[in-house]
Every structure is written in structure tokens, then in C-alpha cells.
Length: 358
Image 1 (cartoon, rainbow, N blue to C red):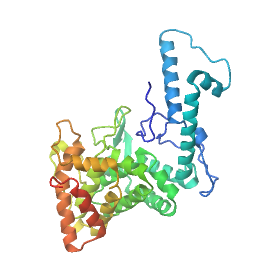
Image 2: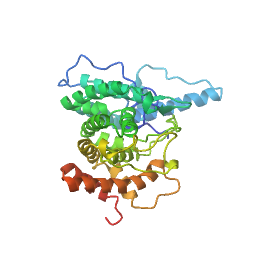
Image 3: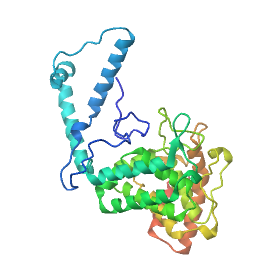
Image 4: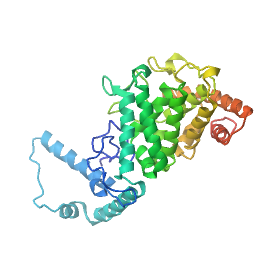
């Protein structure tokens, strides 16, 4: 049985038009208010329908490769074909999934102006941060990124996220945008304005609900020379690593990592950290961003895995976290000693999940 794409498959390398494709749909609903019930569920496929389409495509291609003529259904009624071919049980369950798709669209405001604008803003952000590599998407160097353009995008997005819960759902709807935010933590860890604004945008997006919480913890950010290709799989760890590394830098420290744990010309933690560049307020914002995700099942599993020995085939992000987490614990303790804060208390509680004696 063919595998159907789930609601949170990675993009932009997913099949165009798929559930997580970062390209904007032509039916953006730009003339509909946020308060009006909007549903594009008729344009979206249910999981059962994705499965059916993929199996039909497989059958068509197999027949073509074998030199056979593809038999076509003589009627024009799709429901009649589904009933005859798939049965009443399939029809029943597909109706149930269709109602769930409609409810999800209503709850998230999918297709409303604010949802669509947030999706577009995150796509624009990804466009600024990533470039076309040899075989896929590659992270740009910080010097090749238009800093002021990225800040402008983040400021505009922040206003939308503050004003609309639909915008928060839209901002977390594409893996490409979430990956771009994580990339900014990595590239501009020493830039207080950039990471502070980015952390606030991501925190608001995460507050929309469980879907974004789990998605951001699942995303993987390949560091050059690695590229994100059609065959890449998101394994997580990147959000936890780069938020903590930026937190450490903004607290006036620097996560020192072996060269083999860094990408080609990329050092986790970004710019050189010095006490003069430390910004306590931004460090607290980064702590709040991470702790907004603390209910994520994926994140909790990652933290608990950090208690164990790192397996030989572990990702570079996983290996790097074994170095960064103890430094982040020390940084949080040092900031709390100066003046305690709810964000620091929450961060320390989260980091205790990675402690061996927990």
C-alpha cells in the first residue's frame, strides 16, 4: 500500500501542491475576512484520497512501462467509481476525514488573508536565507544575506502574529519558514536585534498549537556543504541546538565545538561572543522561545536522549548538543544569579530533562 503524505511533511522539497508545499495556492481567499468561516477543504485531499491518487499513479506508470494500454473508467461520476472500486467502507471513512479537514481549516483560518500573508512572509524569509545548491537547497553565508531586508520581513511578520491567531497558524504551516528561523539563530547568534525579533516571531507561532510545536522540533537544518534535497528526511535536533547556542552567545559565552561538528565554514553559535555583546533581554527572549515548545513530545524525547551515550550514527546536531547543553545550563544559572526570571526558571526546568540524575 502506497504511503500518503502526512500533514507535516517537509517542504520546499515535497511534491508541489502537497500538504506542506511552500508555494502559495492560487486560491488565497484575499477578499474574505478573518471572522468569516473559510474552508479550502474542497481543494485539499484527505489522507485516504492521497493514498488513492498515489496508488492510481503507480498503476498507470506500471502499465506504461509494461507497454499496456491503461484502462479508463467509462463514466464521469467520481463518486460512482469510488463506490464501485473502493467500496462503501472507504466512502464512509473518507467522509469522516473530509469533515476533519474542514474543521482543521476553520480552526486555523486557512485561506484567510492573515493566514495567507503569514505563509507568504515565511516563504519570503526562506527565499532570503536559502539558495540553490548543487543538488538541493543550501544555507547562504551570513555575508550574502540582506540583513535589513530580513529585519523588515520579521518586523512585518511580528505585527501580523501579534494581531491574528490565524497568522500564527499560517506562519507555522510550512517547514521552509520554520527552517529559515532556525537558520537565523545559527547565522546571527551574536546579532541581538536579529535573534531577538526572530525568537519573538517563532514564539508567537509556536503558541498557535501542538502542530507547530511538533513541527519546529522535527525540522532539520543541514549546514553547508550539506544540502536539503528531495530525499532528505527531517530528524529534528536543529531547533534545540541553535536556540540554545544563540542563548549561550547572548549570555556572553561561546559554545566551543570540534571542527567536525560544524558545517563548511559555519560555526555553531555564529558571531564571536564577548561580554560586551551579551544582551540579557534577548537571552530571556530566546529562553521563552524554547520553553514555549516544552510540551512538544519530540522535544521531550530529544532532551531525554541527551542523557544517554550518543550513538555512532547520530546526527551532527545531536552530537553538538552534548557539548552545548552543559554550557547553556551554566549560562542560565549565571543569569539567574544576577536576577531570576520566570523564563530562566522555565528554561532550567526544561534542561533538567537532559540531566543524568533526573
